[in-house]
Amino acid sequence: MGSHMSKKSSETSSSAINLNTNLQYTTDQLSSYEAACKVDAELQSFDTNLQTRTNQVINTIAAGVEVRALSLIH
Image 1: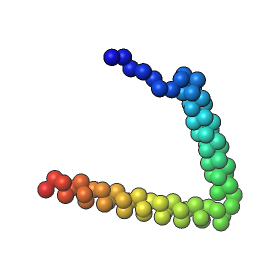
Image 2: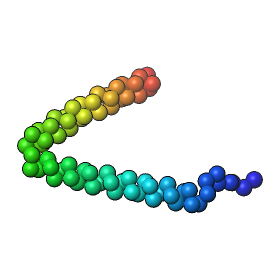
Image 3: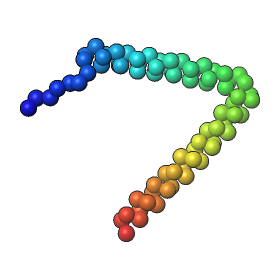
Image 4: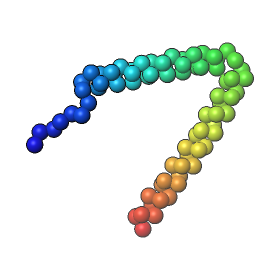
């Protein structure tokens, strides 16, 4: 009745290394993008508009979830 791991430990550690590498790559990209936004007014404007639109979408989705959650109570 014991548990059995389907992945070998080398596969698991390889996945962890890949995830860590991907996160570092993403972090480096975001740092570069952030630095570019500070010096490029056009990119900064694009980023501001993107953030505004993203927040609107998130708020719309969140409001829809709240409405459905409240309707379950009644």
